[in-house]
Length: 142
Image 1 (tube, rainbow, N blue to C red):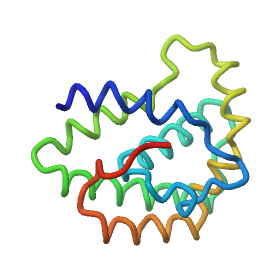
Image 2: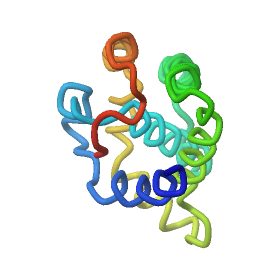
Image 3: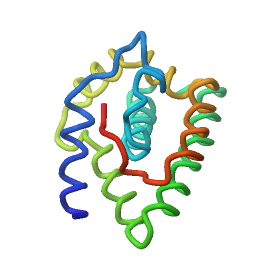
């Protein structure tokens, strides 16, 4: 099962691009916590790798929700929590073998969505979602 999770997440999450104008929790209400975790991790890594780090407010929001999601996944995924997190981190590290220019060009196209996903409003909605959904894998991916 875990192997299937590791293989399916990059395909599901990267198949559909984020909408730069509507990158909000309400738009992606059916996405799993695991999917959100992977996408914000990927956006954060790409921002750093491309020399466009989040501003202080978005970085603080990212750290808050990223930590909360890790704790949530460990809690609700049971004994497989750490393995699932490792698989999601590998999936978020999509850049292996990809030229830096290509990664940064793709990140530039979704930069606004990255900001929306780490806005105070979205982080608050994600924190509410963590309280109501006791399954990190429930839902699809973007």
